[in-house]
Image 1 (cartoon, helix red, strand yellow):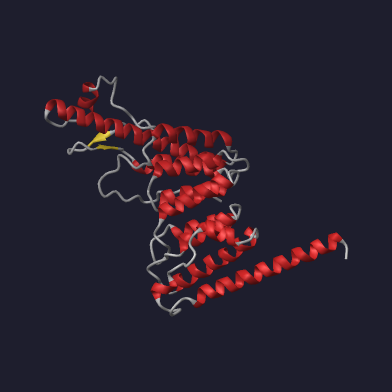
Image 2 (image 1 turned 60 degrees about the vertical axis):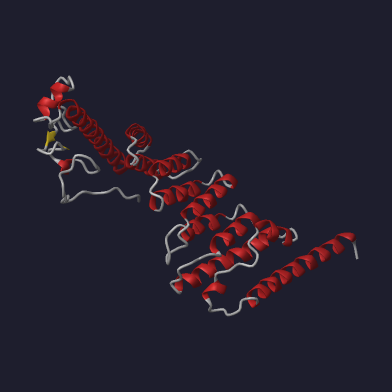
Length: 311
């Protein structure tokens, strides 16, 4: 037998033995559970150290990562089906999987959606989902979808619009990123109240896209940003007036004079902003601005306000 042949046979034997050992190890772990239907035992992981499992893999990290990823999916699926209230194994399983194979992108994408939502739809651990996504981005910096998943967790679970906007904006800079990343970054910046950032991102969206629907949507957002910023600034002016005089301004004309404005400010359609008797700055025709969040009358219910959806 040639040396090359002996090497091939030896490598094959090591691979087979490793696969058998992995299977035996996982079966032994399963057998240690007192009762398979007992919640306390179903939600316990006997080996939760990524370093320990990595050392035990004998160099077959990718193989073990696939095994642990399969266990992760099975674990989540079973507990979700049973409407479980805890998923204590989930984060350790995902951390082991991604430590074994940092390039296993589905583990990050689906793992974040498993970890972040509250039970029974997930583990209710959005902070660990963020850490998982950050680890994934560190090892896969050119995958724009990971930035999207990170921004999604910040937005839907943590309601941190500023960090969501930052994640989408970073992802938008990745080569071949979907153009909608810029749209999402701008939307999150609006939620955070960062009008200058939102204006910059929506302007970039308008200037870098050829699709009419996207450009029209960007223009509508820019109009709405102008309204929101105007109303916020005017509301601050009402507060200053009240602090100085001890009363509310009688109307927008008195407020404009007190702020040394040349005239009553108008919205992008040329209609003057108005003031309620309670000192609230309002938009005259809110239906004309699809995305405004400021200047709406109390209890306002739009008749046909639209929202942009990616194709």
